[in-house]
Length: 144
Image 1 (cartoon, one colour):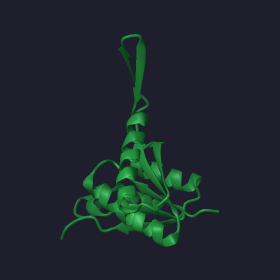
Image 2 (cartoon, rainbow, N blue to C red; image 1 turned 180 degrees about the vertical axis):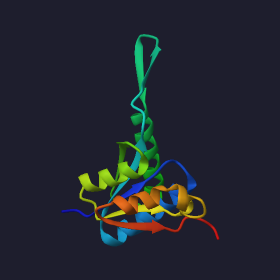
Image 3 (cartoon, one colour; image 1 turned 90 degrees about the horizontal axis):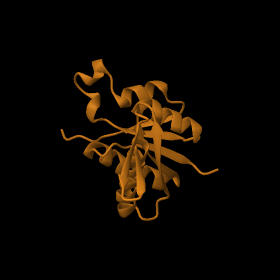
């Protein structure tokens, strides 16, 4: 069975830095990297263009963001096996669910929002660590 690592992305620089670290970890462990972008709304927008209907959803947007981040990671780590995914739900819950469903060994999260008031108000990293059924790697993603 292939080892799997889950990384959550949202298009931010913090998520990108954590994703690059997750890529390094996946390479060192010989694991597949699941690049996950969460989405909350289920709305679908239909746009009529001539005789065609174009359907756009939050899920499509999330999958596009995951695919774009996977492309950026692949540019740095060419030999890495990546799979972009969109997952419905709040980010922490979506990452934990995907990790469980995919039997992932590790979830990688960034630490940028784990300081200051975020410790009191909550953060994705804290929520993932509290609920994950696997190891959680907190990547250093902010400047000192």
